[in-house]
Image 1 (cartoon, rainbow, N blue to C red):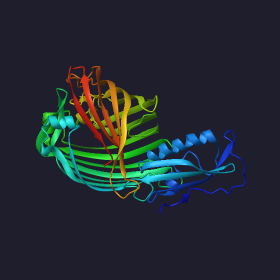
Image 2: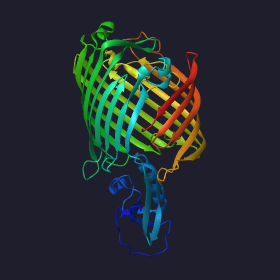
Image 3: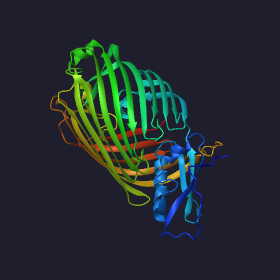
Image 4: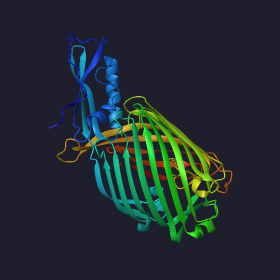
Amino acid sequence: MMNRQPVGDINDSLYSKPNSSASFIIGDIIIEGNRKTKPYIIGRELPFKPGDSVYLPDLVKGFEIARQQLMNTTLFVDVVVALKAFRGYYVDIHIEVKERWYIFPLPYIKPVDRNLAEWFKQGTGLDRLNYGFKFNYNNFTGRNDKLKFWLITGYTKQLQLQYEQPYADKTLKHGYKVGFTYSYNKEINYATIDNEQAFNDTLSGIKRWYGNIDYTYRPGLRTFHAVRLAYTYQEVDSQIVMTNPKYFLNGKNKIGYPEISYSLNYFNVDYIPYPLTGWMGEVNFMKRGFNKEMNMWQVAGKITQNWSFDKKNSFSTQAQGTLRLPYHQPFINQRMFGYGDMYMRGLEDYVVDGVAGILARQTYRRELIRFNVPTYLKSKSHAIIPFRIYWKTYFDMGYSHNPVNPENSLTNRFLYTYGTGIDIVSFYDFVLRIDYSFNQLGQNGLFLHVKSEF
């Protein structure tokens, strides 16, 4: 039995034939399918509320905005927003959601390298795998809060605890996040040589403690603010500092520093993990350290614009950049291309250090096919696994500025890559990218990238 939960109730008093040019009043909003999620969390994502006066064409547009907003919460595998009934000039709205599984006590195994291509280059050894246990409890109290506990061993020993509550007050605008991470591994990326990570297998390895507390603020539907206070303590084998004196700037093998940052994110897209329409952007300001041992100001930003020409074809352009001051930074603060999502398709085999960098990506996509695979589970929300497959072609450009350490050939140089590939998109934000890329060095190859909520 699905719950029928009205967000609000308006007593009808007008009865006449609906007219699309007339204004209507939002009546009841009936929500079904939310066994765990609180109704007011769903209502938080809607661009309308009971009592609003709207024109019918605007209401239809509002239905699509509501569906997109609810899907982008990562709480549901499917959402349907539709008109339920006219009551004169009152309209009732029906929202049906299919909730995700929120508890994931899963065994964990993953290569430690930046991507699968790098893992193959390193020999696909079992000693380069992290494995252990991940416990993620999303939507912990039904308020889209998240509890995370990771216990990882293998290449990296890691303990991670984190709790995130985005809606900690009655206005559903203010939230917080707290976390702690401890990690240890023997092999250390101590330098970049010939545009590749250089590793050293040490006796005492590298130990890292990290703690943070965030304040978050979401005033409307699409804008997110966050302020973070954090502290990091790192200790490395003394031979690392002897091999690369620039690893830290203090000449010691240990360092501790505070960090404060502010980030602003805006999302107005159909589906955040794989957007086809709309735009999204982010900007981040960070101050790391407050003395000569660690002193870095950083500003970074990214903007993505997507155009959908029809039901099959779309184009996206993305630009992102990072600036760190002063230019003289330790090695641990110089990572630019090849880390996280700031990489060029076709240069995955390399890393490019720098204190200032800019990257632009252009991608044309065409949907080839979409289909569902039955799971044979007795579940209304997980009876099928949906798949969408896209063909794409792309062109990337980038530049990384490194005036202090220009010894690697890909720094201080205009870079470009291009290629074609296939993207496979499924539920739980699963995206598999299969790229065949070419770069300006005359090299080409097949590269895989996997992203998932699991």
